[in-house]
Amino acid sequence: MFPGALNSEYSHELKFVSSVESIQTYQVMDSNGSVLDPAHEPQVSKEEAKAMYRNMLTLNAMDQILYEAQRQGRISFYMTSFGEEALIGSAAALDPKDLVFGQYREAGVLLQRGFTLEQFMNQCFSNERDLGKGRQMPIHYGTKELCFQTISSPLATQIPQAAGAAYGMRRDGNKLCTICYFGEGAASEGDFHAGLNMAATLGCPVIFYCRNNGYAISTPSIEQYRGDGIASRGIGYGIDTIRVDGNDVWAIFAATKAARKIAVEQNKPVLIEAMTYRVSHHSTSDDSSAYRSKKEVEDWSKRDNPISRMRNWMENKGWWMKGEDAEITKSAKARVLEAFAAAERLKKPAIHHLFDEVYAELPPELQREKADIEALARKYPDYYQVNEFARS
Figure: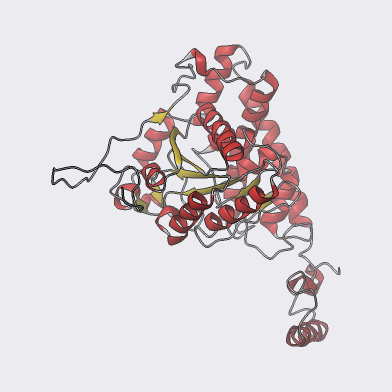
């Protein structure tokens, strides 16, 4: 056959193909937390399951507090993960050294990896202990220690970056992979297609994780594409692909664990499309009531909540008692508020960090700009509120 389609066969029928069989959605447990097939019962310990669930509750509590803080003008921006907390299952399935490329709704991944509440608060306040030294807007987390690349605002730029990093891992032979998170809206960007094709043709050990939550800001998925979701695109690029119930933490866990095995053992990319629903507004800059009804959101929250489903599963196993949620949530809120108050009191990063860590040696023009800024700050200290900034 022709080199451009090696598996194609000749046909005498004049036929245009517009669709193929719809890809099924893999599910481990139903909304009541009952495992549908005993062969797929999660193989995790009680301690591991409870730790994941606590992180889901902590994420929810942190989102509530920081969302309200932004509304009070205490931080400038925020994005919540309401309705998408099951994403934590993907983090639990990875090796701690696997490199994460996030979009902006992956705080749960960081929680599961050990990012502290203090680190979350410091970043959102851009204070002197912020790992990014105040150079990023809130929720643009990053940590070298936990192998989490700093988030950037432009959509989909992380997709080809994740493919390239994975190619480097393949060359190093270290049996690690990258995982790249993005929403279905980002899959409309050119970087999505470039990144997937690069990974497929070069054999990069990368997991592409698409959170299909139904909305790209105000654009519903039905207006974004006509094909069978995002999963069908992976097949088009010759990538092993699976669609999972994105509200089922154990379906996500199992799919990510299997995807990682394929990636590191076969040096192949894998695409996971996680079907979920964005309960929250897109961000604090968005009012979703302008493009969807409150009843739609309320119905989804009641019908299929990932936290409730996980709790039901643990109660079914006797690993969680009714009423424990209230205690854990109360404790989580107290810890978040304590970290919040401490971060709010800290000063902003030292002004010289504006110029640090870009060039090995600061170019002459930036040296002049730095000197000008320092001179202005000395001359007009009250106007520039220099006492609000750390000295070093």
